[in-house]
Amino acid sequence: MLLIVGLGNPGGQYALNRHNIGFMAADAIHRRHGFSPWRSRFHAEVAEGTLAGRKVLLMKPQTYMNDSGRAVAEAARFLKIPNADIVVIHDELDLPPGKTRMKAGGGHGGHNGLRSISAHLGDDYRRLRLGIGHPGAKELVHAHVLHDFSRAEAEEWVNGLMDAIADAAPLLADDKDSTFANRLHRSEPKAAAPGKAAPSDKAKASDKPNGDMTSPSAPQAPAPKASGLQAEKTSDSPFAAGLKRLFGKGD
Image 1: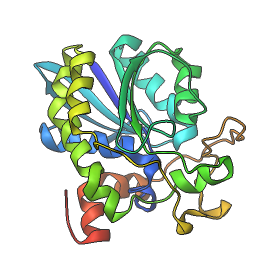
Image 2: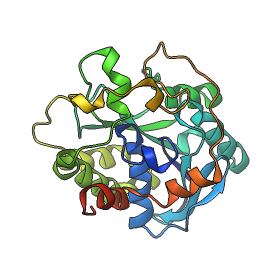
Image 3: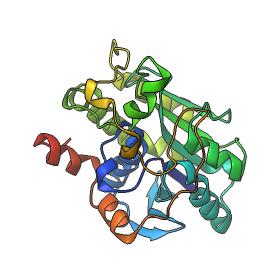
Image 4: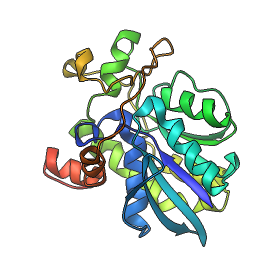
């Protein structure tokens, strides 16, 4: 079995945050390939399906970003899934918006979702890094990642990238990561501009989910367990629905 994990924060209020692009990718795969309805298991929203004839479990941890490893490790151990069969999809500050990188193993790079997963499982799992750009200053990072994608970003590259990930997902099940990466490169913006935090991105600390920090120096506070309402909002708020709500259109 292949385990594909999209990282993000639970709750409709975070559904279109840049930090939630992993959730968006999982939703795109779910819609395209006819997976079962999302249900709660392993401290996560999960759905079963097949890609390239192989059983796949899609996962969106509901533990908040900084405790993602708890959900991933519980599923991996119960289902006896080795790290080589775990693909984690996450936002990446160090890549320009719309750029992607596929890799196996490596450090967490200050990303608290990866930090948590590596603490539970080691670091030899597969990762799909989705660039969201860097705001240019460390003090702007939290507001940048916890701010919604703009209409322009959605139209210029986010929608296209989600479609490309969904189209190419069967290659992950075939362990053809290089071919998968090449397919995604074709959908990348020809000249992605450096990420810039909009003035409205300067969110207050109270706007952040509890304990969710991206910088390496951020504290790792215990994350609250997602409530049933939060899980319901997440599963009912895929990217297309969020775009329709905010922008009056789907993907």
